[in-house]
Length: 500
Image (cartoon, rainbow, N blue to C red):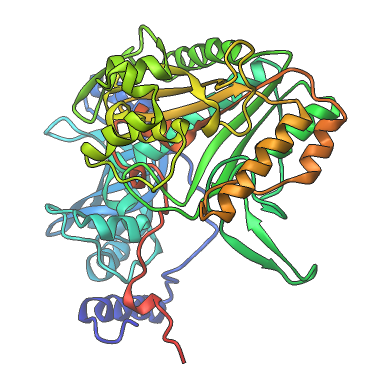
């Protein structure tokens, strides 16, 4: 695969030349003593020394060379690791033959280790004066040209490793993602929720309206479905006696891709016995305030050119949102035939026959969702689009359910759980009928889950929060591909196998 690339061939030749002089270009056994950031923090006092160096101190750093400037018998290089960049000074006086090796065989992109003492250059930059220098890894592919960097969006996603090498802001986003996930876990542990793990291969896909991916279990000789949600398994645990559980889970949905959807994504789902959806709303607010505090983020965040104010969370019913935010007359929003005609007149694509709840859902998507910039809890969802949620006691056409929208996108979905096994059975039957009528995202019948409910599940509230969208929000990234290390992409021609 490298045969026709002259630049790669030249680097391979240098790797071979290193071997011939007794230097392994892929060595091992070197311990990295400190990060570049630790070096800069530890020795910043050198700035105040009269000689602006401290030969009594020693430090060893390792990282990738991002810049080389040769000056005859000396050189400056920039070494980068996960924490930052450090300038290193190399001189033939101290390195002798190793300096000649450096000049002949070492290039930008190579990974090296340098040991020496701290000093400050004439320009005032704290640096490492190397007394020892060694190559650890020879990079045979050259990095993109420094001043233009890696700007090809498609290449950035396909070769994320190269994106991470060249773009420190990308690394920072993923470091922050890790901190966000850690903080979410700490929050729920502090509330005495138990972290659990549930299957990723399901005999029946359930817990959400989505088209599943299908796989095959050879030993069992059966089809299995990749998890679209862990919900029904987590609620089985509530039946079993756990009263507060959560899972940070990977889900798979065989659906389209856009700036906020990836076919595999991360969520946290949590279930809380003896609570209702109003308790979840309060808990969700508390979670966001906890995250902002722990991550030292302001309550005013910029996202996609808009300012989001986390100082207050609005609550509004589904119907009121259609009227007050979507601009649909109330008499139209609550009438099946009138709403159907209204949506057609406004160029919303519809199936030939849809009940009121689903028409309201289409209207919400078309006229409300993108306007929900500041944190807004939409409550009182139509029961027709809430097959797992508890029916409201006073209005049987709505569910005790909410969704949280921020920045024009859904972030969380929660509800008081349906724990009546007979009602759940009828809901599943309706979903099966919808699937038989052509709805690929309708849910399957799960008789074992009905059996579980028949043993009694206490009043329970459950919620799911999209981790990827949460990270997008808190890092300011407007594409889900920028917060998933390896997002799904259309295959390149060489990845498509020819049919025989």
